[in-house]
Length: 190
Image 1 (tube, one colour):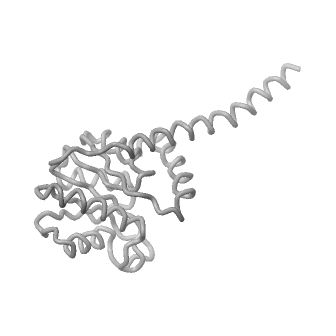
Image 2 (spheres, rainbow, N blue to C red):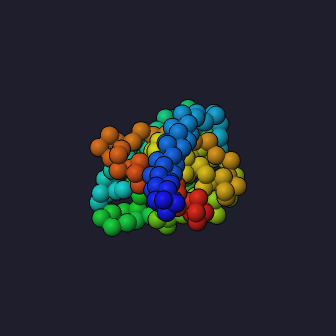
Image 3 (cartoon, rainbow, N blue to C red):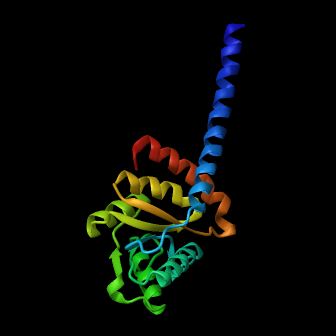
């Protein structure tokens, strides 16, 4: 009888804890994505996403478009394009973003390139190390902002999130993967 009760309680915990965590993460993701950055922040970090050959994925297009809006309203800000080169990419994610910003009127003097990172953690670490960032607007997909903000704050960067929409076709997969990544971040710090 006692073993049966313990088994039942253990089974419920196995179900309830992950569901509870997912609900908590979802609430944090939505709250972070709803925040609006102040004007005149000196740096804008745009986190990379997939490049297909030399063409930006829809996720990356949304990110750079959102960053461009902020940069046009805050012309003194410098943009850090952050992302290395993965499989199927003929150029770095940073290079694809740099080309976009130049084509859209952002001066080369206002574009800082971090092109070695292969993860969100590295985007933040390498950008901070290379450019001595203390405060920044971070632009990434809405589902991704909570974790990016937490990682940046752990590095001592005062962070203001700016959410780009997530393409509908990737939303479910993106959120599932992000829930796992947030759990990993809390367990490992990365």
